[in-house]
Amino acid sequence: MNIVVLVKQVPDSGAERNLTSDDNTVDRGSANNVINEMDEYAIEEALKIKEAHGGEVTILTMGPDRATESIRKALSMGPDAAVHVVDDALAGSCAVATSKVLAAALGTLNADLILCGAESTDGRVQVLPHMLAERLGVAALTGARKLTVDGASLTAERQTEEGYEVVSAATPAVVSVWDTINEPRYPSFKGIMAAKKKPVRTLSLADLGVSADEVGFAGATSAVVEHSKRPPRSAGTKITDEGTAGTQLVEYLVTEKFV
Amino acid sequence: MRLSEDHRAFRDTVRRFVDTEINPHVDAWEAAGRAPLHTIFGKAAAVGLLGLEYDPAYGGEGADHSFQLVAAEEYGRIHAAGVGMALGVQAMMATPSLHRYGSDELKRRYLAPAVAGAAVTAIAVTEPDTGSDVARLRTRAVRDGDDWVITGRKVYITNGAQADWVCLLARTSDEGGHRGMSQIVVPTGTPGFSVGRTFGKLGNRCSDTAELILDGVRVPVANTIGAEGRGFQQQMEQFVVERMFAAYTTAGQCAYALERTRAFVRDRTVFGRPLAERQYVAFRLAELQAAVDLLRSHNLATCEALMAGEDVTRMATVAKLTAGRLVREVADWCLQFHGGTGYLEETWTARFLRDTRITSIGAGADEVMLQVLARLDGLP
View 1 (cartoon, each protein chain N blue to C red):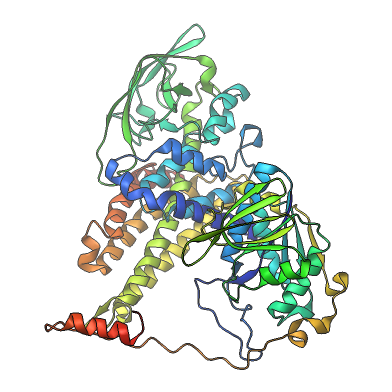
View 2 (view 1 turned 120 degrees about the vertical axis):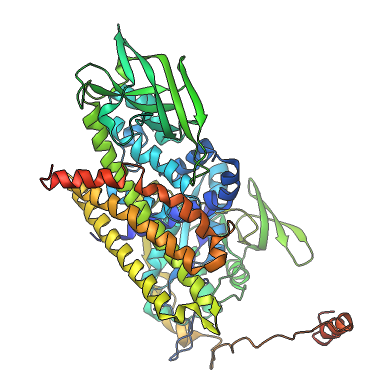
């Protein structure tokens, strides 16, 4: 099975993250950039499928030059090759434009299965898998906590707030995963060294036949107009029990619409 | 020496290994007085930790020594030092002589399973009357045809109760002193080999430290590592690597302890302001960090010299002496700045103080390091 895993480089969610003051985009320059956490689960799932059914795993990343670090890191886990879409005109791309570029790149990769994280820890919009599936004309099995492959048939347990739904589709398809699906491996010494020799192909917008004005700030369908820091946490409500604490607690929960 | 992007990636891997495979379990292992070494070593081998510098023909990674430094520094973040010590014994104390001097057959038979994490190993040198003074050891191997017949007693053997084979130093002739000793691979399942008592210790409680008894243990002379009669010299070389491991790990332990203590003093409020705002606290922690930085620089220089093929006896001895003394100071101050909390067994500072005290004793006591250095400086 030919599997493509979408990998995004994001600022480390464990550290302080900021937006830049000039164009309101995520400040990637000063941040410690890492592989989007959820994408590691997608990579692990791809490797497990490859180990069970054979095939090839390719990483697909859209991002600036420095995203190469994350591509190498992803490759050190075990995938075979990577494709890096890199072009100055991509800066500021919205989800719609990103899906256009990734769909164009996927058009060159002949994937049976496209795996990705259910969301990125910077954008968190969760729409990319659906947009991609729509553009490619394939099924979208999103938010999977379990995935079973049986020949050309895919069955996923789709995680919901109430429980899960069982959905299935034939390949090719897009499957997005949550962190409940597996436990990602970490690279071995051999994996780290081998990753340096794995092929990474770079593609520009021109290579993909996508015009620069359809992407980046120029082609963005949404714009961040302004941003401000989240205000510091204020002190919570403290209830001292003088016989009526229970009632006060319930009143608080009702006021805050928790119950 | 500057570490590269490869080192950074490898450091991430070791850190994840420590965070996921080791640290969640150490409290249970400490309570049990034993860490399951076969399980741990299997996982360590899967990421390449047990044969970093060894020949790929025996399952090694073929890496240079600097990756060993990175691994050892990260072992400093293990929440019970006994586990790091066990990993160190396997990779940097019991196997270097075998890799360097052992025959191909011996390496296939004993090194390869150790690198793969299937066999646990130990270094059997110390005896009841012979600690750092190795020249006086009494365990004797007498030749009988193509076999050695070995009789003697070894004590304080780390990994001793779980080892599948030991790298044993025994007297193989009557020349006396530093001559006439050999390093021999002794499988622990050989008739006549038994594990005596395991010792309760101040720290490193998850590390089994055992007494080994050899009563007419018969192993092939082909199990001799390198040249017969060169065991002391080979072991001295192996001790140099051991000292370097101790110094690397200690630098990692100190840096991690200070990082945790800085976080604590920033958080802890005393008399209305964070403890970190007390100049004495901040300055003392800065002084200790500066000393750790110097140790780390020295370690990197030692690592680089070793990789260039230089004799690093002096540098490794300085590193080990400095590390042993520094970690005692760091452990004491980290506990002190945690106040009463720091004295509680449930706070990391207590175990850290107990665990790290061995550094000034193991792999040659501070006083032996001083003796080595004094002699190198031309003093009697």
